[in-house]
Image (cartoon, rainbow over all chains, first blue to last red; front, side, top):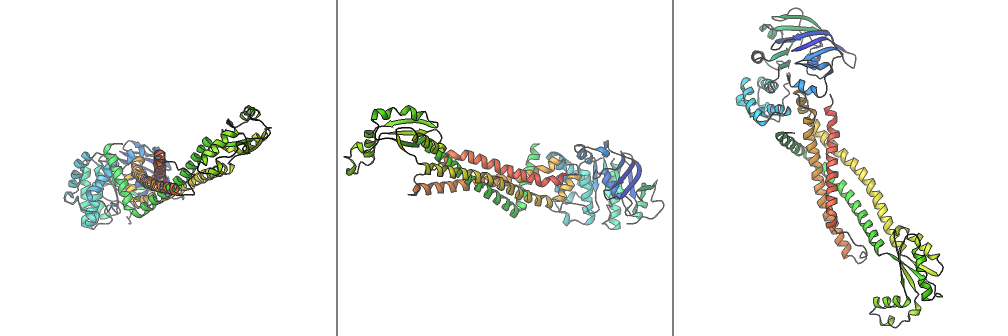
Length: 230
Length: 295
């Protein structure tokens, strides 16, 4: 479960990015986090991945208190959260298999675990035949699916996708979103940050709208009110 | 650290080393140069020190007794000489014994064989405790009544002391400077690797890799750079030392100098090189990776 309670975030340069956000995301939930540029979506992702600490308030992620997390606890918290980026962030000199193996080894998984888990995850994202390919040999949609596989491979309880369809055409975007819904149906909490209104409207999911560092709407079933910018 | 992790760290460390071939070559090169210069000066200091110890063992000054003293009177001076500070022993040598020794030394010279011992003086062969105090001991013995003069080879001992002292000071200074330079260069090599792999490091951090897991491959890289540098430096040092030793032995003018056999020195030299190389390598990599592990 993810809980943000009265969270404020002010950067060192004085920018007030988040103003008193309170939000609860239950285990196994699927939510869209939407809002215009500069609304504070990226800051929320940074807060949820422990990249920054809130100036005020409390954040609990999967049992870890991020507000005052120790250096030892931080990696353990991060293992419960898989992150997907708009620009994929794959390692180009490693094959698809090695991109996944790399992050499994990084958390101390054994070679036996790698042999078992990687084919399963690649099959889940439909890339079982691309294991030996390099990212540059794949299409944008395939690369994003590798990024999803990488986020999933350590079996996190939560997936956070930051504009995952930003570099994909509408058809691939829909496929990818359906894949995230499928992953959610298997029990993983999914948080998708996006500005693609059409895509959000296609799914009957909870939508949290942020503007000016505040939650301005929290409802189910497509975007309600205001205009979403890129 | 698990067995599979060790293999992974080792593999990553080696592959980092080869993926930045030129910088690795430069880092190994500078480590070799630093260790070689350090080692050469240290070995010069060790040899000068050994030479001094040999001289201390063999060195004796000769105190000649005044002609007016009879042999019996001359023998009486022994206790007074031995009472002087820094005198280890004093052996009385009569004129006759001195002449015999002289004639034996020049056995081929018929001209010296029928000399009268009376032309020589009774004397004491004095061994000192500390060769560095030769001058003071000589002056003290000269003041004893009945001693006409004292001969000591101060120039040679002073020269060796100077060589040893200079070599020690130069050696210490160079060790400090070169260690800093080596750490700096290895640190920069590893920084280049970490910069090249910053995306991988960011991903590792994002998926929850611990700092130590991220650090180990770079530590191995530094270790391998330092270790390789140390091994190459040792082999070069050995070759160089043997060449110089052969040169000294075959030289007519340097025959007085006896070079310490490398067989007696290789263990401490190898150990020092390995420790210094590894400290330089690992120290350099730790300083390079530090800033990537903050946050």
